[in-house]
Image 1 (cartoon, rainbow, N blue to C red):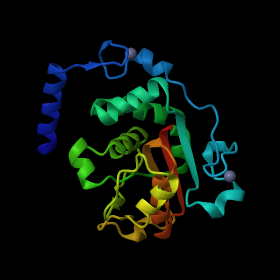
Image 2 (image 1 turned 90 degrees about the vertical axis):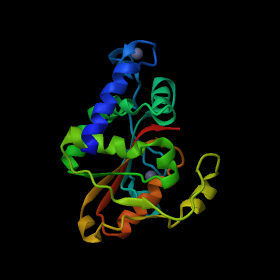
Image 3 (image 1 turned 45 degrees about the vertical axis):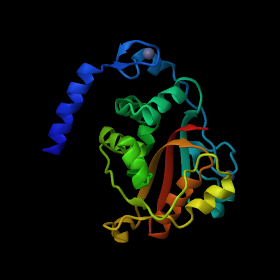
Image 4 (image 1 turned 120 degrees about the horizontal axis):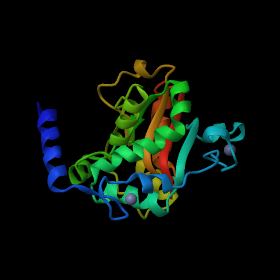
Length: 233
Ligand SMILES: [Zn+2]
Ligand SMILES: [Zn+2]
C-alpha cells in the first residue's frame, strides 16, 4: 500500500516537476545524448597498488593487505559523471539512479552475472537517511540487482558515532569507521558462507568505507567481496 501511494506521489511529482537533464533538455534526468557522452575507464586497477588488473581484481602481491577481492570503477569523478552524481546525491534527484544503474550494468553486467554475486550496498547512518530521504548506495544496488536478475540483500548497518568522512584524512577515516560497520541484526552469518558479494557505492575516495564493509563481510564468512563504484575522486 505504501509502495502504491509512493508510486502515485512520484507520478504526480514527475508531472508537476518534470525532469531536466544537465544540458537543459526537459524530459529525463539524463538524456540519451548526455548518457552517451559520459566517459568510462578503459582499464581497471588493483585497489591497493593501482597497477593494471583485469576487472580490478586485487593482485596477488596485495591480497594480504585488503579484504577486498577487487574493485571496479566506472569512470573518473569529473565532467558529466560528476555532475550526474551531484544531482543524485545533493539535489536528491532520485530518478537519476536509473541512468546511473544503466552505466554500471552495461559496463560490468556480464562479469557480475558470471560471478553470480549477491548485491549489497554501503549503509548510511540514520541521520543521513533522514536528511537525504534515501540511501543513494542502496537505490543503486537494488536497481542493479533488478536489471541483472540477481539477489539484493541489505547486509550491513552503521553503528555508533561516525563523523562525516568528508574532509578527513585517510588515517582519520580508518579510525572513524573502525568496527562501526556491522552485519544487520537480522542477518545470519550462515547466509554469507561461501557467497560472492558485491558492494555498490557511488564515489570512491580513499576506499576506507568499502574496505570496512568488506572486512565485516569476510569476517562473517563471505568467500569473495568486491566493490563496484561509479567514480573515483
Ligand atoms: Zn542532456
Ligand atoms: Zn596490487
